[in-house]
Image 1: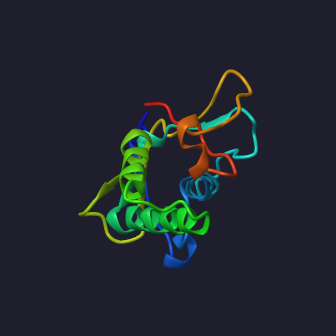
Image 2: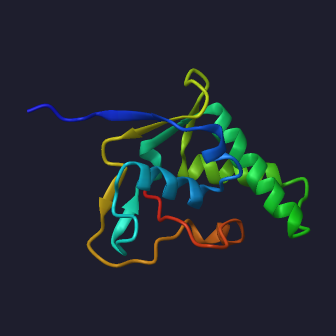
Length: 135
């Protein structure tokens, strides 16, 4: 029996504009028909890859958020980079714009109902929660 190794989705630019990571992972999960509202639902963020323009959009979204809070400084871009390095998604220059690759194992139901969060050190970047990203 064949199994799916990965699938690629090409979103419309408007669907991705201004998205922060939590919003992006919700969009991808729902597009793939995953049970996003299930409290046990989790995302392995390292199993999702994106086109470089999507990653550029994350920088813009977070820089805007930090500026609105009056907290933008010389370290902001570095902090955003560290979040992306730690949690993904990984960006590929050779993907067509707006392309997302979802690898096998990106979505799963955990054993427990956990608060689904990014690393707590980055809580200021994710005011509406996020996903627990396993690496």
